[in-house]
Image 1 (cartoon, rainbow, N blue to C red):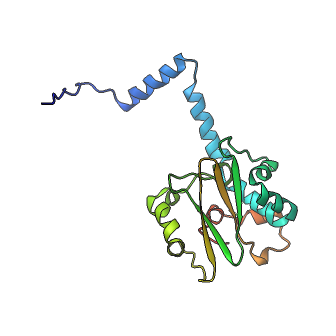
Image 2: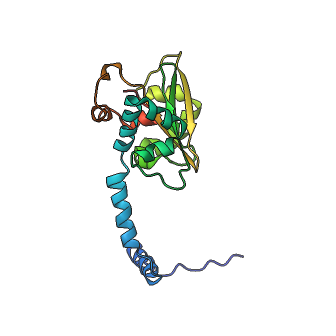
Image 3: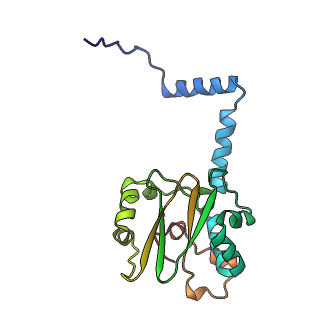
Length: 198
């Protein structure tokens, strides 16, 4: 017979447990409040889709940069002052063409090249998107408002621990002669994930 022990009458609240962990870290010379503040600043002020928009706009306007981006995405974005975490060893730029449309996902969790395209949207983290995009990509894209012709090949790319992706969307033809700043203003996070066109 298994003996069941009674639950203690007093269980510390979440707030008290967090305070105890913070005190324990502080006692070891670590500073959790400072770390949390720094992470909030990074997320709010630096991990933004506007970084990727600058990358795409530069690739559209500068053929030499475009080649560098396609051959070594990590080095190319760092040229623009956009940092890449050490564990993002590879950034692969996927160029859409009239014949090929690329889309990215993370079937295991919700990884993105967050310093370039920002934190993942809720739908990207959803199990339905993660499971269906690899099996029913055309249907998923159509459900999200992107109805591609049957002749367009769809390629789905799954992030890994060390490899992240950014989609370089097709440049709209009416943008010829635009400045890089104006080009960047039309590039969206969804287009850099591959679930929309511009």
